Length: 253
Image (cartoon, rainbow, N blue to C red):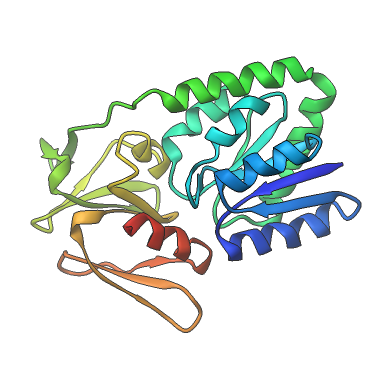
């Protein structure tokens, strides 16, 4: 089998290569390619691969721009923060991996690929991916305010006053700029991410979604992890893993 990797973060690409060598030792892996331009050049010079592992945000644009002419190839998407497209991935049987990617997650995605490859035709893969592209290119409607709970009251918090969403146990809390903590009705941060602009909110880890205007500073420790300081008291500890550090810095611009 031939697999093409599209990924502009060196640490993530290195991790994917290592995992693939362990899971698919006989597979020929091409890439990683870091840009839309490189990807287009590669497609022009090589036969189509059997499978593509693709980040959404590449160094010079979104990978969909390079993938659109080749929708007959199944894709497993990898992403750090473009989670509003997740619902489309699920509906259309196109898998995704949330960074940082581990061995069980990649194995599950590959197992799904093999199952779908045996069950469906390339035409069906192509139709699924075309629908995904259509959904992605539709401008999403973002929330302007959130209805949250404070005791017996329901409070409306404008999105511009949201500092962060934090998950504690099974509860998703919203913190506003005054430092007030509210209970939300959301079951996961994935749900919240679909409702906010990914250019303004970043999924720092599995427990935290932070809002750009309220990031005071960040520091990188000796392991490559990033500690974010929010404009909030008491200041919560928000850590970005070293695998997502490059994506965080790119998101900040």
